[in-house]
Image 1 (cartoon, chains in turn brown, red):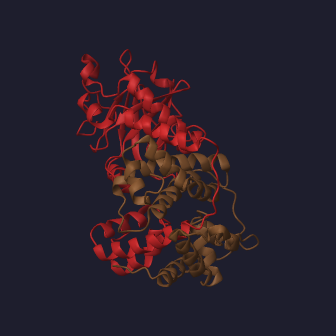
Image 2 (image 1 turned 90 degrees about the vertical axis):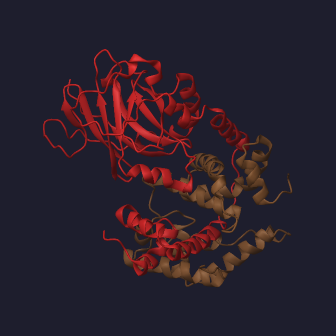
Image 3 (image 1 turned 135 degrees about the vertical axis):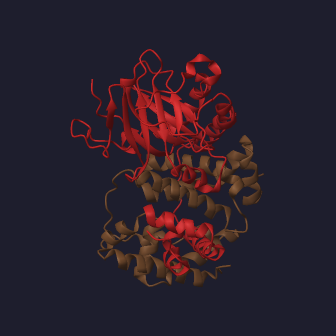
Length: 185
Length: 276
């Protein structure tokens, strides 16, 4: 079961089998907690969000469609939603994006990623494509995805009008799709 | 908001994919997607791109035993009595017609044990543990608070509303402050108090969330410093009448909220300004 594919592992997880569940959670927990931490900016909250995300993923496992995206991306999408549900209820301190952009660190996958897993190749490709975007579009996209900001929060943090922020998000996401070669069916 | 056409929805596709829209704009766009495969595919492909970016989050390790805690929660939910079929079988309510505020209470559900649709206490407690684990720590911030607007100002549309000596009503709000329904608390003297929850079309949004109909929802009732949990069968459109067996006095009820089994609070109402 340790070598099972992500999809097979998810199928086992969906049944609620404790052994499969432990393996599934261990495989993805560091990414899930990492993303939750970026959005909540609080380790305790992040772990609660991560727990909720795994429970929600278990609930929704039947709705996972392998033709669309990888299990990891699907799970991280759920994690982001859970984290946003939570942070939108409370006042997070605003981020000053101009003076404190953590973006380059964020989009640099760990260098020890040079192992065999194709997963890392995919990540490197996403990182490279993101890097190739104009800086303000990259900043906008990272803000509203990895950092969990709303368009308004990003606009305020970057000191630009809301309309400009939205344009950057729209252009950036479309351009990234082009670079990654994802085709709208 | 008028029904948007394809070009307007394509314009919003990135924000839809990244879940950055709210309120009426989001609802109108989603309604369009429901009937437009082309726009749906456009949003889906952008969603994939957004999810790919999420993979760039740097790793962080949870505390020791994290996976065991997740598995315990799943096992607890899985082994809890199935809320929907069981809850409905005991129900008698939900009613299909809204009970107008101020109308006489429905036929007393206490005449037969089968008429109560709150879960057996034991069943409720098992789930309560799972639910509260997610809810505690967020606290009242999740439950939209009403600021006592009924105290003599007669504002019928605002906040908590004192509709009579034995009944109060309050808006159900999401964390964003959007009003999505109404909760009414009725004091019935020696009979257990009754909460009526009405969410109108918003129930369909609850049902549609995450494309899963298997989701279960619960009504939490805060009273006298304790929290009771009742099954809320959203397979029906409601409104629901919930008999508060566990509450001594209706006036002890401070808040109700709709939560799911992950502990996420969807909306809530606070009863803050009652006379007497």
